[in-house]
Length: 237
Image 1 (cartoon, one colour):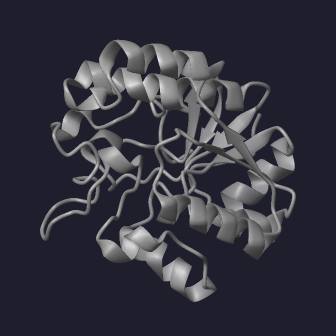
Image 2 (cartoon, rainbow, N blue to C red):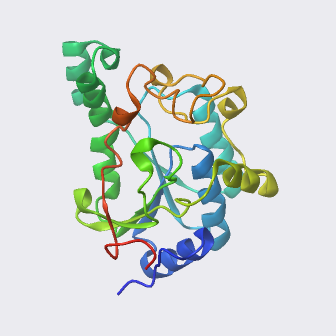
């Protein structure tokens, strides 16, 4: 029985997860504010902790600059997974390079090719993975537990150590520990994805309003984070 519990703090959860699963555990980092917090925690606990990222081929220059800054700061290795080139070529040939603007179905197709399929390869052989999901990020994430079973990927554990953190908690940690972060955050981008699918938010908008802004909030997931079951079947275990 796993010793990882929903009631643990973020640091406690990561320490327990590394003790139980390293090296068959990795952080999936898109290098948003939450992810750099977890990177810093992981590197303090285990400098050899695994980190991977999905390079969709359409990321902002600021994201690539941050990846380099993280490598330099922590002397860590970041595993990079790219989409299958023939699949990208076939998709773009049939639907166009900016197909995602035409419909939710085409947007999810693009996310499937550029993100979901590479994620499957990244998770192959792992016993657990870590994300930066938080409950107050979006209406699609209000039920996120810290410890979940990812049935879409062989029922491995999915750990969301910052699930109960606020946006203020995240930035408090970044400033307290001088953690490198994406320069776009200072330009009004609380959530950062691919360049053509991300814009700055307007005053009064929620944190993910700039992601796929032409869609309704209920559809704003890319397929990486499908509904999962809490590890114990309920929160608070």
